[in-house]
Image (cartoon, rainbow, N blue to C red; front, side, top):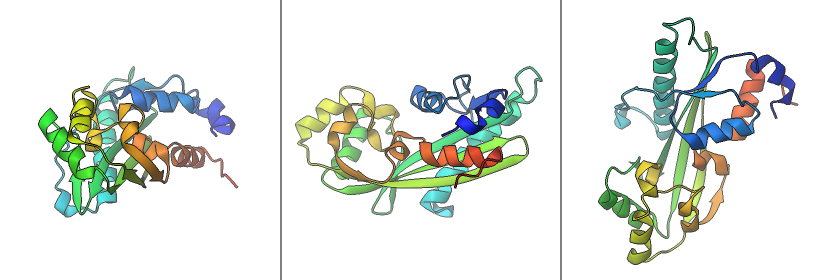
Length: 208
């Protein structure tokens, strides 16, 4: 997807405002093998009542990107050309579900999601110096049924504790998913197709 612009973007210092090896691997799969990780210190304390779900994740991603860009730009040796950030949230019945902080909370959230359909939103921001692109993608995820024993066994693996909604679709949590409607990578945490389209636009390549 990025082949037409790789010569341009390959000369840039690209930073992913994240500590997630999953997102880094996805970026690598686009051909951006020199991207570096820089976890943001942005305090994710936006008031959900002030935003729609899609706005909330986009603004959180924006906060991450701005913090990393400003911090790294203080030193010419680390100043980035491009910073990419993302934020993912699980929602159902008007409620938002982020990363559970305890195994007990993970179990509680997963039990609510079982046998139902929820929506995953991933907001993405790309900052290329003064140019900024912000967008959100969503995907419907249908969970199958599971017993309390099965849910607890999954929680005991530790995987749910750093995942929005308490599960990782690309890991063991994928066993809970009956089907999805939308971009799988939106659920993983970085919508690859849309990201590719927006990067191409930034560098003057319009896809037909």
